[in-house]
Structures are given as structure tokens and as C-alpha cells.
Length: 421
Image (cartoon, rainbow, N blue to C red):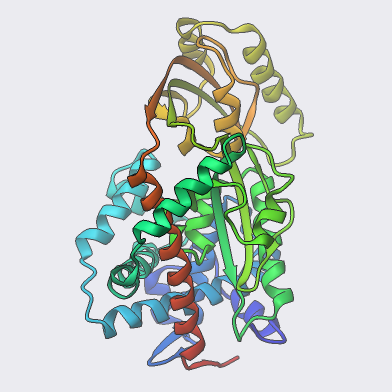
């Protein structure tokens, strides 16, 4: 983005986790960037770094803030540009839409709006900061609907060609993919973008949730969906992506970012099935036992809790017994999850639970600052047959995604961006 980030890093050190709006107004505010007619301040950056740390659930250290500063500022710039384009196009993003999305995130955290605002405020994140990021995510989809979608049409000949191609490829597979996309731009060198991608991969390998990081960092139109790209046949992606996915199995993510002409991708495979098979979802009735773990897993307390999770996994059978174990040992986050589409869970959890029989307990799994075991108390498969409409929808979505990415890159390329540090 710039040759030296040390000025930004010094500014970040002035920001603390508990930075409040009132405190920000009383302190000296410095402009870091001018983006067309808008500005980004050190306070804006501090709040967004706090949010990135909260989402990734990593320690709020000086080193972490230094590492996050470039990619968070870059995302802030893109968000400004998208919101400016919405204003230029006179698209009304209603506050109700933003608050619905905010409430949905609160619900995922088992809180109401007020409770969630209090939770994020403790991490130094004003509700307005998260709501503005949500507004920018909605903005990209709104821009796509106005400027891209009306011109996308899959002809009957294209549809038949794709159906014929699918028929010719029967016996091969299609994959259910998730993605995080980091584009090249004039402000970031390729080396800096790759380093950002490697940092995100490291967070994923440490147990961070793919969907949350996609919402936070991805520039793809799928970011608002947690990076979900859907079912994609083998051989249908550009050659670089196919090569990067060649050795990836279900439940895995790419260990190194995949370079394309547009930028770097981090991709994961949730599931795989034969091409032409019916679309199916596995719905499981789940119970969940969660235990907090110290960051240092060699700590005696961590070892004791891991041993407890292992013992439960090996010895407990049946939902009634598991419910009693939850009552005896479960910490906040434990309980009855109800019926859950397994494909919506993080890959390592989805794949593991798909292989369990009813009444079995999973091995210990990482997640959100601790360890978990799951019990499958029921399971069913919902099937939707392959139809021409489904093929047309997939082709349409793929083309919209590609053209939206191009439109977004053009907005960034044509913007006036003046960094002031």
C-alpha cells in the first residue's frame, strides 16, 4: 500500500482496546487518508483494528495491531469508495437493512441488540463502526444489482452447452467452496497483499471462523455470505484456482494463497459430490459441549480440560447421557443447537459431524477460544434434483461475481486516494 507502514503502526499504538467515542472526540484526531471527498482518521482505523481483533479472537497486542494496520486501512478505503458509489447512484441503503444484519450477528452470538452492543463496546468497537462496515457490504451488493445484474443474461445456447458439459463430465466431482479474495491495487504491492493473505491463513489454522474472517476482510461479493461460493464443478474455475485446489480435500483450506491476475484467493472445500448428483443438505440435531482453554495448550489447566473432552468423546454415548454431561461440565456456549445444516458450520466441524452416526460424540474440535465436542442426536438428508434452472442460476451467479469484482476494482483504480502519513 505504501513503502513504509511504521507511521501507521505508531498511530495504532496510541489506540487502546477501550477507546470510546467520547475519548476520541477529546483527543487529537489525525487524518490518515483522503478518499475522494471523504477522510479516514486514526480513530476510524483504531476502531476497525479493535473490531478485526475481536472477530479473529486473537490477543490485542502491539505486534498484532502493527500486523493488522495495513489490511484494515486498505479495507476502510474500499468501504469508503463503495459507499460513495452508492451515493452517486442514488441507491438508498435503508437503516432497517443494516440493523437487520446487525441483529442477525447479535443472534449468532446468542444476544439481543443491546447485549451485543455492550459486548462489542468492551472490545473498543462502537456499534456505529460495525454498522458502517455492514453498510459497505450491503453497498457492494446494491451496486451489483443496479449496475451489473441487469446486463447479465445466460442464453439458451450457453445453458445447453453447460448442461452438455456436465453430462460429459459425469463421474467427476463438484465442490462446495468458500473464498476470501484480496485484490491487487495501486496502493499495495503484490508482496504486501500476499502477506495479508498469509496472516489470514494463519488465523484460520489457529481456529478462527472462516465466515467471520470473510465478512471482515474479503473483497468478493460473497463476503456478506461468509465467503460461501456454492457448488462449483471441477475444471470450471480459472486455471490458477483449479491448480491451487487440486490437492485440497473436504474440510481443508489452501495452505498458501492462490495467485491470480486479479489478486490472491484463500479457498476451502466444504464438501464434494459427483457432478450431476442431486443437490443435498445434511440436517443434524446437535448438542454442543464447550470448554474455555488457555492460549498455551501446554498449561496444566489446558491439558486437564483437553483430557476431559477426550474422555467424553470416547466414553459418552446417547443424547440423554450427553445432556447430563453438559449440565455437569458445560460452559457458556454449550447446549442444544437444534437442527443445523452441517454445510453452514466451519469446514473441520462440518466434515467431522457428517461422518458421525446418531448417538456418537465427535473428537475434540477447536473453536472460539476453547475446545468442543458435539453429539449428533438425529440426522436427515434433504435432496433437491439437478434442474436446468439450477444450472442457469449457477452460471448467472458466477458471471455476476466476476463482473462485480471487475466493477469494484475499477472504482478503486479511478478513485483519488491521498495518504497523509
